[in-house]
Length: 421
Image (cartoon, rainbow, N blue to C red; front, top):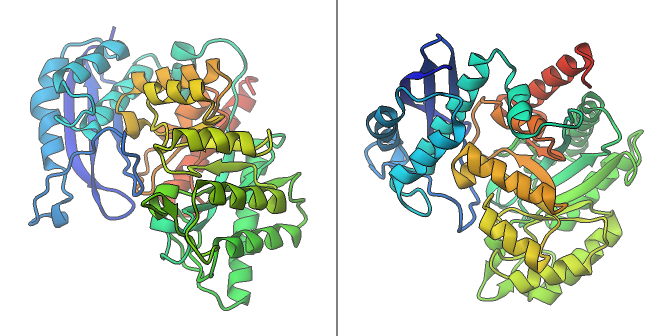
C-alpha cells in the first residue's frame, strides 16, 4: 500500500497563455503522479466552477494562486497518509471538504488536479501504465480499444476568428481503421485543407484547437470546402471519412431565436432543426454536437427524432459530464452520444460514474480536450482505459493536441507488442 506523503500545487500556463494549476502527488514508495487541468472557452451552465483569483493586477484576473493555496493548505493536510489507490475515498473527501454542489469553494480545478494526480501516482505505485490501471480498476473484461479520433479542422465561434457561427467543423475517419491509419488520414486531410486555403488566398492561421480559422462567409461554406477537399483526395466521403459539427448553439441563441449567417433572418427551434436536416442530407454528417440551447430539453428530443438514426446527437453543454443531467437526457431521449470532459464535473470518480451510466444505456462516449489545454495526455489514457468510442482532441497540430495523439500512438504500439491489441 502506497501512502501519500506530499501534495504540491503550482500555477502554470495553458495553451492560451492563461494560468492553470498543476499538482504533484508523492508517495512513501517514491512514486508520484503529476496532473494539470485544462480550461474551456464555451462552458455549459451546469459545469463545476473553475476558480480564478479575480485579481486585476495579475494575469488580468485569471490567476489561480487561490487554487494553489487551496490544494497546499486545505486539501493536502486532509489527504497526507491516505492510501493513494483509495480513489473513491480521496475524491469523496475533497467533495465533502468543498461542501458545495458545483465545487465553488475549493474550485473544480483544484479538486480535479489532485484527483488525477492521485490516480497517476496509484498506477505508478503498482507499476502499471495509466490506461492499464484504469481498465483493471474500472473496466475489466473485453479487449482494449483505442477510440476513433475526431479532428476539428476548422475553428469557428469562440475558437476561431469570429466569422463562423458554428464552433467546430470535424472530419471523422471510419472506425474500421486502425488508430494510426485514422491519424494519418486526419493529418493528410489537414494538410490538403491548408493547401486549398493557400491556393484560394484565404486566411490559413489556426485557432485555439489547431483548426484553421479562414475568412469564409457562412457555415455551409466551411462544410462545402471540407467536402471538396475530401472528394479531391483518395478518400471517399461517407465511407473513409465523415463530416461533423459542434455548433455550440448557446453562443448564437438569444431571446428564443438562433442567429446565424446561413439564414437571412433569426431561426426558431424548428427552423434550425430543418437547417440541420438539410445539412445532414447534403453532407452526410455523422455527428451533431450541441445543436440547440442547453436547456431546451423538448427541442433536443425533437432534434434526436428528426435526424437519421445513424447520426450522433451529441450532448456537451446539455450534459456537462454530469450523471444527473445525463440521466435526464436518457429519460427524455435527448441525445445518443455524450462528450466526456473531467473538468466539467471535477473528479475521476464522478467521471467514471458518468461513463458507466452512458455505456449501460448505449450512449456513445467521446473523450474531449478543452480549448485551453496543457501537455498532460491524461484524457488519452482515460479514453483507452474506459473503452470510449471516440476521442475529440483538436486538429493534428499544436503541441498540446499532438501530445494526446502521440500518447494514443504509444498505447497502440504497446498493445500490439504485448499481444493485447
